[in-house]
Amino acid sequence: MSAHANLERRRQAIYGWLLLTPALALLSIFAFYPTIATLWTSLFSRGTRRNPVEFVGTGNYADLFADPTFWLVVKNNLLYAGVTIPVSIGIALAMALWANGKIRARSFVRTAYFTPTVLPMIAAANLWLFFYTPGLGVLDQIGSLFGLPSVNWLGQPETALWAIIIVTIWKEAGFFMIFYLAALQTIPEDLKEAADIEGASRWTYTRRIVLPLLMPTTLFIAVNALINSVKLIDHLFILTKGGPSDASKLLLYYIWEMAFAFFDAPQAAAMTILVIAVLAVVAAVKFSYLDKRTHYQ
Image (cartoon, one colour):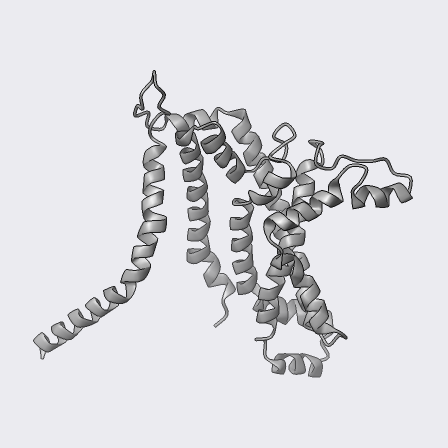
């Protein structure tokens, strides 16, 4: 009996590993190996004809921490994430609550909210480039009706990053709304009926019942929004190219610039490893702590 149990356990283990093999192979090729290779590259200097590649250990990381441009880019990215994430989530939730109600032309409203998400990133950036163009853009045309002066939204350090933030919020809010809509439709109608019987107002029902039940969805959206905030690059190519004076430059664009414009792959690799480390910490906190506090059993 013991031998049979051991055989069955071994068979189940082999079966489990066979099921995991496709995913493990894909992760190894597209995640684990690139990460290890990037970490290895970050430990060496940039090679030239006169100066061959040398092992420098954490030298590239020390150079990054001493680089004022790097800290400016980090500051830009923190501001960008700190504004786009809560604002996009708040707008998405408000749109979902409204689009989920019994309103006229509900399907049209949902489609209108979701339309910006369908647009390719480059197309959306070109559309907003038309809005922001000084003198000819839609924003300046509207401002001229009220006697306001022309503003170079993308050409001023004070406004360039905020212009990128507005584009991102416009693009992502509709996408996040879909998740909230799906979550709202899983809330049992019995809860609403019980709240009505108890005399709870609509705001009380939303605050006490709906929002807590939406917390897992909110956490999922927040993590995705955080990931999106460190991988934005399409809009920058079209709108500002990180300028003026690095005022709108974000981490992924700086990594691309370092690798393919300045041909400094080790510095780009070091920045990539730092981004991966931060995202890994966020993932660890999410799975080990936040998930337990947001899922109701």
